[in-house]
Figure 1 (cartoon, rainbow, N blue to C red):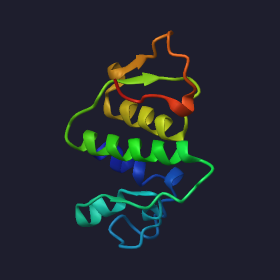
Figure 2 (figure 1 turned 30 degrees about the horizontal axis):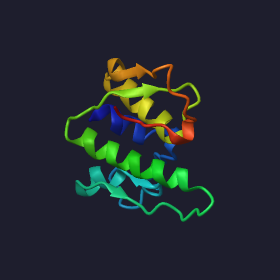
Figure 3 (figure 1 turned 60 degrees about the vertical axis):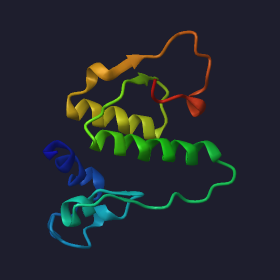
Length: 124
């Protein structure tokens, strides 16, 4: 997807124009999710999440996020709930949906849910 590639190789994502997109060691590859390898080798690299014993929720959200990316790669954009206090993973998913034209799949969360954003169910 060209929109995702444009976002990936943007200045906000540590892209260095001097290195060039085809450089094996582009700075954008040093993320927990390495999409640079997609355009370099046709693979996606999910790097290990740092071990955080006191932040189990963050590790769980990382797993959910990686599963979301896999679903999206198979042309399945599931409906997701919008939470104004979303964590960094859900905020990233919102941006991906907006840039990819899937805004209609972002639904308002049911008002009966009294869960914190840390414990949200991302997909229905």
